Image 1: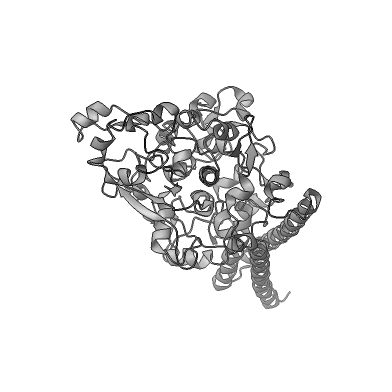
Image 2 (image 1 turned 135 degrees about the horizontal axis):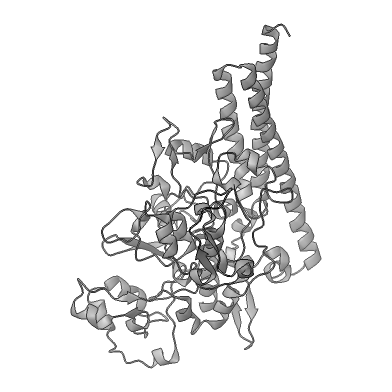
Length: 534
């Protein structure tokens, strides 16, 4: 059970999983029962319910909390210090931690999606007007999830750079040991970034952030906080406490927008089995924060804390174009819908991210929707979870098995990821099948991009010819539809392998919508030419 719990935990986060899971040391086991826990339990009944009877039951509260005496003497004005650091967990979970911080050189750094060999070669044209056109790099290991976000050219003008120059590109550790703040805006950069997004990248602010990032005198940060200030207060990537409860080691989730989405649809959300979701919600500090605790590991939910489409940006309303600012909870929102459902969802939510710089179409910029893509797929229906493919068991130097917290790419580790469930196959055969799926879907993505490009070009030509606004509006609606069905797959990181049937249907729909838009514009231009006597 312990192996499975550890395996899943890191899956969520991409698998860093080592921030602040309390550690069960020999010394901790030897502590007497009267170590102060009983006094803590007088006020913290929810902690007692998690801790007692668990693997961490005998751990003193002082293992993870400091200034306990001051807090006991004056609970209202003196809060204990909570240690949230990977080193604490690493004291016992050395192999998991080691696999997390080991650089995976199979994952390339700063590989831009919007280049001829990237995932989205026509990205600059199709996302014209959005900050992602300045740099939209493919993801790599979770040990880099904070530094990779802060250093891209779309984040705060590129002011954050490697402290040691390009030699720092494969350096892990504390954020500000790796990066430095130059204070300078670089040319050809954007000023994007917001506190909500950082909540997925780090566990540092979990006690300083109210549920959903609402403003509160007790919260240091909220959705509208200064992004540079919160970035400079972020020292670690996401850790163990995102996926393991530190009090009792239960598998859990802490990402507030995911908890909200599951609470809203407990029986029908994408993780429900037989009308039930194995997630028990617990509220702390009178609703200041919530967590969701599971009876059994479900890495589909644990990974979905980050690997989903979510909105964390300001934007506008479909209905009237009014600005949606960070004071609105729509700027911390998980739809839990797939590519075929999202346009309808965002229209009903009355939110879109930006207008295309050429056509003026109202577009959604997607994040990384792996969880909702995987939902309902062949592997999902078979009961396979994320950690089984991306965090397989391996043997350490001591001969004991542990879950790899480095989050591997299965196509590079077919034996470990695939052959456990497909023992009659071979590495070569499975890799061939994987590449066949990815090749096919990549082809559909390129065709989708081509026809979106044709739609944009046709719009420009029609506009110059003086085609009426009513016709242009019809073309923009087709652009909005085609965009959602295509761009989702540039953000999803499996090139369709997580759900090839969904990818094919969605991309075919994008192509059809673009072609329909081109026809509308071509027909209107033909009428305009006849009217001019040409």
